Length: 330
Image (cartoon, rainbow, N blue to C red; front, side, top):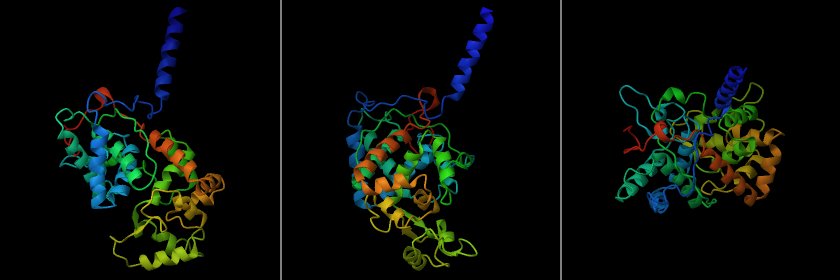
């Protein structure tokens, strides 16, 4: 009988371990580098600020890089790794080809600045550098600053195949968005908050062309799209547009981290289907309306959501290391 109970207890323990979500893999803390590289955050901030002064693209590029990193293999800087002759890395998957080089360069420059300090050399992970840089670009664009949890290791693998199916697509509906974020330990409210990163940056015309030209046989233009906005997009993105042409995702305040994104959705001015559906679907509309009205409420929700994002599938111990070069495995 005793043996049978032990077997049942062991089986239950295994079952519980199997059910632990992948976003609960490590304990991060805000003062992780206090005795290792105490000035790490100010060093990164200075490097990010210098890059920001060179180009505003630093802001959306770094923020998008962080998101794409965390949703594939967790927040482990695997998206920064370069492909080699025998490995096609995450960054070369079609969903990542459009990641702007300024995001990668921001991390590389911050890493160089950290390693220039003898005490810090090869002591700070690329994953943590990216997490700090994401916070800093948000603040530089007028958004909220917040304490960043640290202690991530860099991942030991990066494959293009691992990207497939793990990033939200422009045509996603609310259920698809909610499901994908839930798989990463993020709620529907977290998803709506993080979607506001689309108040910054730009998109190539091909990502939304079907909404303004070929939505359906009855409605060439998506009926949920503001007519004047659709006409404006058609001027900027004619059918034969150069594939390199891109437009601001937020037509009102494209260089500000604010709650204008939600006000745009209320006016039918979400660029992607996955943006506009947040207002079009009655289940998520109340949150959009609330954050369109209160920037303070949105800021609180965004900080909570991006903090949770930073915890996704964090690597520790033998599951990771600190790369000497963020683009290359040790």
